[in-house]
Length: 245
Image (cartoon, rainbow, N blue to C red; front, side, top):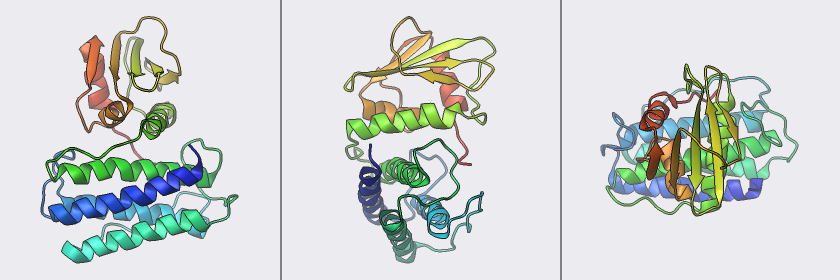
């Protein structure tokens, strides 16, 4: 996906998140994030948006801490979220393409990194906000879901920080049935290694529509279809939590 597409998606997803949060109310529980209510969700995503904006707008070339969570609630909190989201979109859309700033995953450029990362951050949390309404999550396009799966497998879980490890080598296959795409994740005592390949046998295969897999791999939904060793899917569930930096 192009950077402009990520920025456009970020814009739309943030608006949908705010709308769902406003409809549900800040006291509503968020089933996809146990222990959180909509208030917690808005504070978290709003903080992340401002944190990301600061890197791009202020040109921080090393890690810079966030400003913490606001003591806001209700309509004031929703307005704060919308303001920060709008500022992030405007910053990414208006900054020069060769801006230099800190990032934490491989990308063609810092701008490409932050646009992609925030588009996916906001989409997953939009689904969280919609879960507070007890309805069906809105559509996630196939191409965007594939892009998100790749960011997760080839970006986050390629880092030394990944806790998806196994004493004995194991193969996890992930197959997006509506996209003609598959990935083989080699899990060992080292960080996982993912290949864009669906050939050969695997210890466990997770398959289904790309959007469903995308949310499942982020532990928002059950896996759509599982064949083989279910303990490998359980290992993913237990150890795939990530840290941003």
